[in-house]
Length: 379
Ligand code: NCD
Ligand code: ZN
Ligand code: ZN
Image (cartoon, rainbow, N blue to C red; front, side):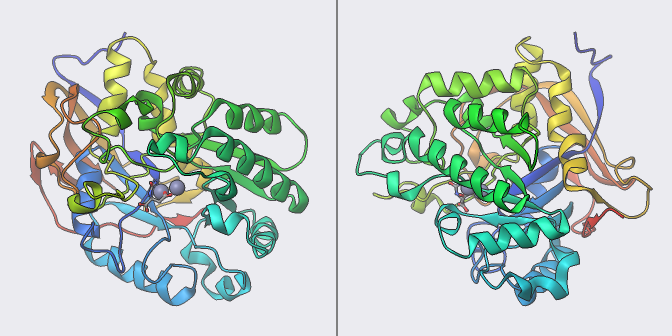
């Protein structure tokens, strides 16, 4: 049982290692101000930002620019992934600026992917892979049919092969099918190489049923929400603490992009993830320890520390209150004011957030408009 005392529960700050803050280039979808306030609202004190910016963050000058932008506007601490660059050696002079590589589906199948794996292997960095094999995509009105489970299963096998070849660390992000899960779990117990993976709240809690209803555009995301059987497998892996992390894949778009003929994939997740997990915990379906996967475990996984307090996270604290609310996109801090969880009743709220001991948010008020720092690699 979870004891809230009178009303409050004190937790470590949450760490979300897969978010899209959209700077530079897509500030109309999100920026470090709105995105980091969304993080704080969700009890998240550190994020790792993805490289699919405009231009892409696959070189030192864009990573430098991202550092400047986040330092100026983020309330939460942050780190970055480097994007796919076949001339990966170009990143040598800014190695302190990224904690791993991110490969998108097309990147994984391009000849340069091998270079990235072997470079990453040299420095012990993770290659974070969005695993879907584009050659298995097909025409279908139903998003979950257009990008079927086989596409993920196939891409995970390909990525495992590349990581074994170069003895590199593969991290499969937003894993969403039982077939891919089996391959990853098998690889975990196979000597040589290293493989880790994360899952999202949406793949655990939502199924492709949403593509048949009025949330069909809002719910478009990649990998897609899956048929019920797949969802149940991913959720069961979480019940058994098998993933190495929980991530939101916070991927905001403008509402017009979501309600169009061809909806942009992704939706905001930072403001709901922790409290969705509490819904599962308080209703007895998950143990409180699941929150480790959204805090200490991902922080250790990427080996980041934040400077002033030794190991780094002692001063990052979130106070959660037992207070019911209903998810309403219009109330979000994110610029993306919609959610596939719209209308869900959640049992807890973020009451206060402290980062490195400094108050950032108390009782509905932001105490500052900046202060986030680059989380530096350990050692
Ligand atoms: C992401 C985005 O919008 O940047 N969209 C998504 O559906 N997850 C890209 C990605 O993570 O693949
Ligand atoms: Zn992705
Ligand atoms: Zn993403």
